[in-house]
Image (cartoon, rainbow, N blue to C red; front, side):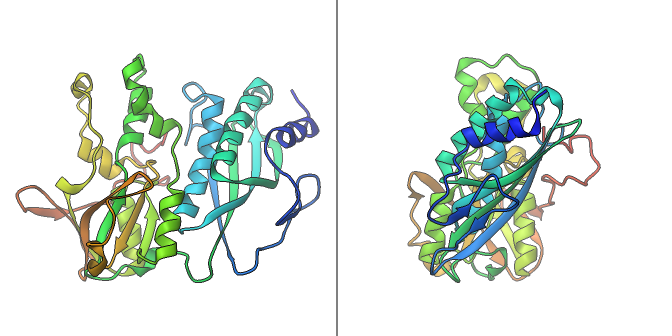
Length: 333
C-alpha cells in the first residue's frame, strides 16, 4: 500500500491547488491561509460521503465516487446562492483503495473541481477499513445576499428546478443489476454525475427573487419539510405540477412510480425555492437552460399537503432520506 506522503503527493499532483489570489497557503502546511475578497461573505459547508452508505465500491466506479463526493457538497453552496472558491479534503481509506482506485478517484474529483471552479486548499489522510470522504467547501456571496431556508412567507409560490426522480431511478437500475442498455445511459447520469445548480442559485441570490431556498438532496417531501419548518409555514403542493421523470415503456414493468421517485428519491440536487406571488408572473421558464416549475404555494397552516388531480388533499409525509431512520431502504446506495 502507498504511504501517506505518497498519497498526498498524488493529491497535489492531480487536484488544482495553486497558491495565489485568495489562497495564501495551501497544501503542505499545518493549515490553509485564505484571504477573503473585499465586499464578500464566506459561505461554508461540510459533507460526508461514506462507503456502504452513500456509495458501493462494487457498482460505483472510482471516478464517479470522486466526482459525486464534491458535487453533492458543492450543491449546498448553490442552495445559498454562493460562488464556489475552495475546498478541504479529508480521506480515510482502506489499503485496497490506495492504488489505481485512488488515482481514478482523484481524476473524477479533479473533473468536478474544474467544472465548479474550486481550488483545493488542504486536507488530511488516514487509514480506515471502509472508505470515508469528508469535504468542506467554501464559497462567497455579496453581503446579505445569501438565500436562507427561513424566508418563506404565506402566499409565496413554491418552485423547483429541473426534473425530480431521475437520480433515484438511476440508483434503482444499478441496484437491480440490470444490464444497462445504451438507451438507458441518460437515466443514470443524474445519479452518477449530478450537477449542482450553481448558475441558477447565483441568479436567484443576485436578483433577490427567492425568499427561501434549499437543494433537493433528501427528496422533495423531506426538503420541503425542512424549508417549511425553518420558515414557520406550511405548504400545498400540486402533484400534477411536479416535474417527474418519464419512465421508458420497457421499464414500466419494474413497477416504479414517478411521483414516488420525485417526492422521496432525493439526490437530484435541484433547487427548491419560494418566490413572492407578485413576482411569479415575471419568473422565467428557464435560467441558462435549467427549467423552473411552480409546484405549489406557501400557507399559514404549518401542515404540508399534497393535492391530486381531482382536488383531493392528503398530508405529504417527509419520507425522503434520513440516515437515522430505521427502514429497509435507509441506505442511499
